[in-house]
Amino acid sequence: MTDSIFIHPLAEVSEVATIVNGTRLWHQTQAIPGVSIGVNTTIVYGVTLENYCMIAAGRTVTKDIEANALVIDSPVIDFSDICKCGINIKDNKTLTYSLCS
Image (cartoon, rainbow, N blue to C red; front, top):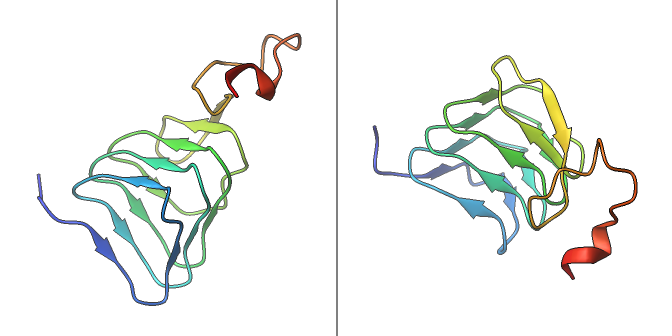
């Protein structure tokens, strides 16, 4: 495992995105506020990660990820919708994003 983070100079990364060691963000990538990216993950050219999405460790993301998505597989599969506090809301329509505010 590598102990470094690579962020291309042309990538746009929010100050409140959580990025850990081994992550690589290539040019024209956008990590919007609240994004969490697991260790040893690669986000390729031109991908946008929307608000509060979570990417599991060791993934290679080649397409845009919607807000509040939990991504756990490679190739990327949108596994679930989550609140910014991590609660699964896809299967429980009574929960709202405001519960964790």
